[in-house]
Length: 218
Length: 110
Image 1 (cartoon, rainbow over the protein chains, first blue to last red):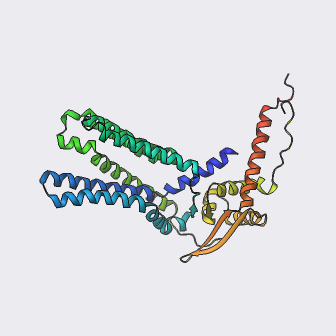
Image 2 (tube, rainbow over the protein chains, first blue to last red):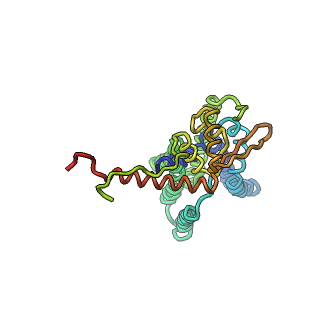
Image 3 (cartoon, chains in turn cyan, red):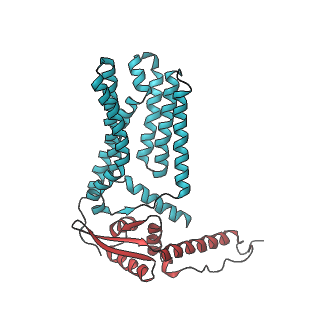
């Protein structure tokens, strides 16, 4: 009985990513974010103040607005693609206990990151790389665990895999590349590509399985 | 309680039918869902799902709202307060029954 309700909750959560639209949106968001961060890094090296500002502030705006607007944009896309094919579902808002837990986890992660920047300003790049990638991988893993989606477990696996690759070849990378690896520009670029491809592939499969808009309702 | 055979659980016959139980569990897990989503999840036929929903609506467990999104008809279904309570009571009774069934020694055991 308890399983039946848990399964129904799980099914509803999985339904959110069944069409691949959230992967596609997040993947494109990461690609644009990484592109702007790379632009800022390039402009800094070339001493191009205007482009540096565009890249730096643009990346902040993109990630903030993109995160806040995500749910609405994805929902608007689902209204055209998913709901007319396999139906619409509205989720129950998180309970107070769940919300408290989310706030506590976010605060803890923010503290770790701020602590790393403020308390250990001269911490080696490799330590920063490990901490930042570990925090990010844990976040993606937590989402994957909630969704029980193999695709999201793959995305979570990509992050530590990249970090391990960076560390293995560390002495061979140039200082610029080392900075790009540490602060996540390359990670966001690769993860963005993987998620975009995952989203396209899933959406293609979903549309193949449900080609027609259903007309009648009983 | 231990040693007693598990008596019949006082189950709600409206919810107890497998198809309606699936519909109730699906709706209990979300705020609301439309007819197509229920079809997709339960794998029932349109006529079957429609009949079960009507029965649940008559019992006051499910609220059905017929509307349109653009040119597409939309039938929104959600559990009523009465439906949520009935489902919770049904769950409690069934869990208690299953627990009693597990702790009761089977016949012929020393």
